[in-house]
Image (cartoon, rainbow over all chains, first blue to last red; front, side, top):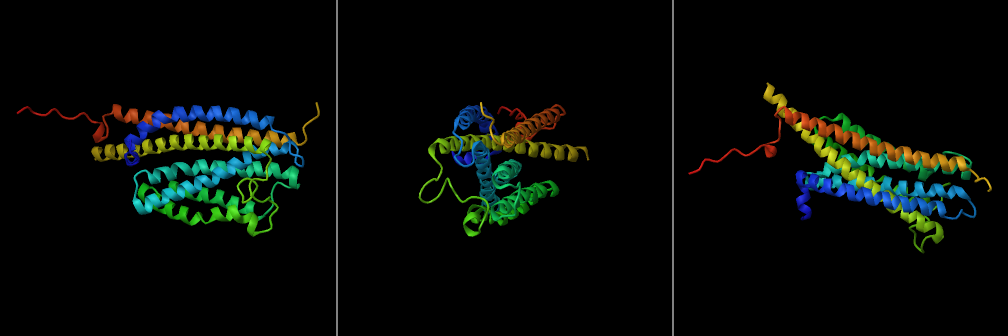
Length: 242
Length: 61
């Protein structure tokens, strides 16, 4: 099947129906292995057992940003190429990305209290992450308030592209400003500063979370296509009745 | 066995993850079932997409 064939919603639905059980099953297996490895990982010499929160916090943070990155590509698909599935992909990704960003904020607060002595501080990393969550809520609000799907898609696409400015701010906030949040420790020039006994479980959990995001996104896209079919059929039904 | 320091924060973080992931899965599954039910209901009432309708029989020449 060529990539262009996926532009056809019926073909996409057929592919999603066949793919979701397999990707879902793989997600469960990788999660089981990742959680096992995370629980067996040694405590950090400074943070002790609270380092186990990192196995949730860091993948959630990555997925919050990945979700917005995906929506930004989809926004270009809507505005530039007018791809039929672009706004479906963007709309489906928004609540999932928002949920992972919220999880990042919650787990970060729960990690911050024992390590920093506070649940929250208005430093650049935490504030820019909160801004990302608010941006997600704004995009969801646009989708819910503008009734015409094509108008909503254009408005949400513009907001998404404007909001994409927040992604490099989140990434580089720990370098540009003096923050309580630690600097980059996984993907950085000179290699990771995390020892392999903790880094490997973290990467396995990141793969598990990414697979979960991919599965949920496929399922949410399928729902969105079905929702548009329901809308079309109801409009047909209403016009036939008049 | 020594008590794990700050265990309440670790448990709360994992509980939050379970709640968020369970909510996402349940929401998507319930939404899917509702949409399938609505489409089946519309189909029963005879409202179908053009591509889903059976093609009319062609006259033989």
